[in-house]
Image (cartoon, rainbow, N blue to C red; front, side, top):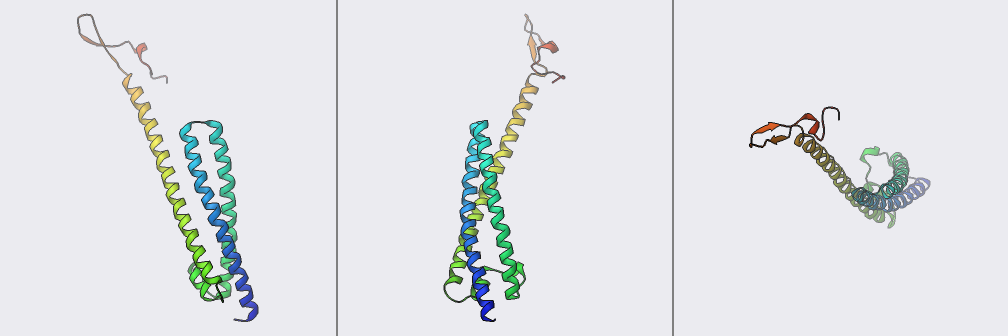
Length: 174
């Protein structure tokens, strides 16, 4: 590999390292944003929920921009090293670099992966809570509508009869 190629590879690796640092920071913000969004949902505060949703959208957009730039750099490094992009790892990039930049790249790649795993856990938690909430609401509505569908009425002598349809909380028109 020529000096110009080594220099360019070093520049790309440095830029990749910087992108990974920024990605780690943005992913942590997304995690915090998801937690705040969940708290806003639980608090049933419409304005707080809207603000947290808007903030989360901005953070996620920034994270996606960084991801796109990372893929561009990854593709360029892949062509320099002659390794398919899908097989390129921080370790392979580091082995082609001189100096401590390779080790720093590997460490940062691991840190960013760990934050991405935390984000996936947070996403699953939120998804599970939303699903659970939806099921609870559906179950509650079903119980309410079924509980009053045909309420039993006891007469003066204790006989059991059916209530007038107008006595239902919900009828077929609802």
